[in-house]
Length: 296
Image (cartoon, rainbow, N blue to C red; front, side):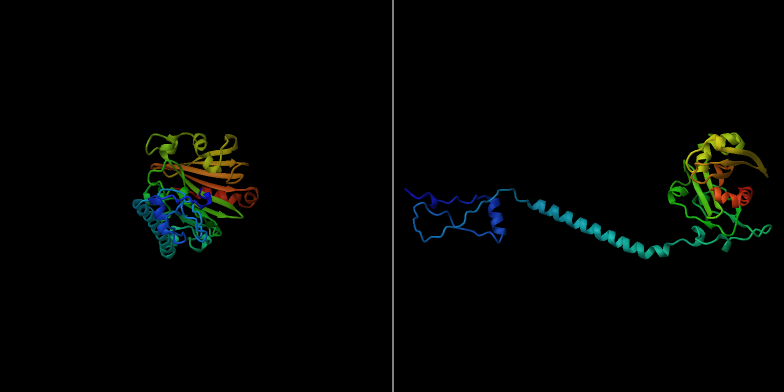
């Protein structure tokens, strides 16, 4: 009876196994299994190989994978080139100073107010804001101390993305002095407050009704009617303005806020002057002067 140890399990053979053995140089190939009649002790026993059968990728799968790799490489390359190009071009595309907030004191580029040299005059023009360029807001002006600086406004807050048909209020311009406070001009679509086109501010409603709608844009968060200390109506030519004095202890803009609003065209324009308690002690008169000077 033949010795069972002389028998070897033959490798599993199919197309997949042959492909693997043909393409893998480290796998040895052996002849057919040793005959059961062979009893020669000098014949070395080849190692037993166990092959796991699996489906080899088809030619179309190879092509698809290669295409995906090339596509990814191309995307990475294009992004790299775009980033490099942007880095080279951005300095060339930097807007002139008149289009962007200036990181210098306004007294260095705005004209001095003839009647009071302690102030300079800011006159907004179409080159200053997206809404003015789109004709959505009429030009406006106000005075401010020469030591103040103009702040940059995030694109999402400037209304640049929605002109000329913005549905929500946006910030036109903003100026600040760390010791005195800050001012900003906020514009609101008229349709947000009334369905009547080209309404005057009186047609929108009373001063109390208007500030109830625009109060959160004065405080930066919420508005409580109890925060309104004083309201008044001012007439400048044919333009009517509502003026407000607010004490807002929980406001993001500051604990003291002054506001002045008017309607012209399809927009309500709101001027806001804000200060914390420390700033208010020093700049109350200055902020009130700036508020009084605002006009559209």
